[in-house]
Length: 421
Picture 1 (cartoon, helix red, strand yellow):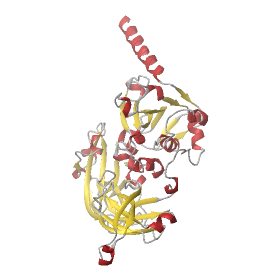
Picture 2 (tube, helix red, strand yellow; picture 1 turned 30 degrees about the vertical axis):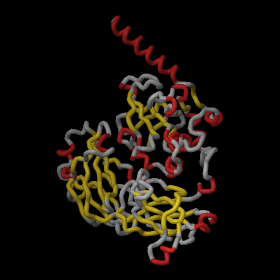
Picture 3 (cartoon, rainbow, N blue to C red; picture 1 turned 90 degrees about the vertical axis):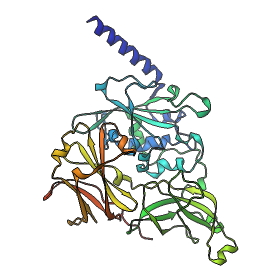
Picture 4 (cartoon, one colour; picture 1 turned 135 degrees about the horizontal axis):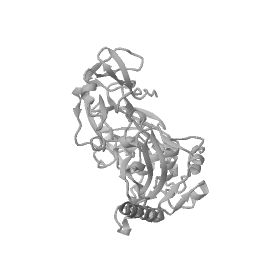
């Protein structure tokens, strides 16, 4: 009994020490304006908090739950543990902390452009300092309850204090503030540089042949008069001279260009000045000049978020690789009998949501275990993948069938709709 009492006091002391490390509670927009978090360009914390507030369901009693699964790595969430230095200590039964906001995470591609744009359009190191942290627990029915929300930030690099979070800039976010943010169409982006370019939109979409399609809009007249071009790169980290394809915009503020590059996650469009010289008259095309703006890395938003397989601790995801439609199965490690349960189950690939005829299919138990990817490193899940021979195109969908003769248990949203220009 004495030992239990000592243990309880020890845990309480740890908890109180950690609570003291949290600077305070933010209950209003006024409170949010009064802290450093996310305000100055190119920091993304305010947009991150705005997105999160609009993806949390808050009931009349102030209870919060998510409409996605952070333990699976949705939207780039990752497990942060139970005893971080700047947050209250948690017992395992009280849930765990999950962190959101590392813009170098592949999962962040699924966030909307207004959250990620500052990261891509700046070279400053402080562009990736902000984080939102959730205290999450599972209620036993695959629902994720949020007990606490915090905002925090990394120390500045020049402070030489490591990669931890700064307790002097860590705050609890009250439900009332989240409700206020939900009522806002947008959130303050004061200090935004390159305001004249902020309306430029650069995207990668899908052709009907599994190739990357460049779409641009909002290019101001002053740039069109100078001459600009769109350039396709492998990802945001690609060297400025390692373009995959390029095209002049031809003086058009909006338009599209179908490339010959197979569609892959991470592809990025950049806007450059177009340098013309006597080489143009010899048919060699324009030379790539100074970079002006960058789009986000390619994703297809919610199409890349897995859907639950009804009645089972597993989920299904549609994605693209080298222009082909592919599927992943996320299986909870606790679902140890999944191969027996899914012995006669299969995944079908369909050209559109309306068709009943599949293009190709594969047995679920014949999916290969995925290794070496960020998906494969998600705690609590085993990940299996199948790369089909079906060309990815707008409307493609995958469905999970419990038996060969039918019994659909999951279907993904169809791949993007084709945009006409």
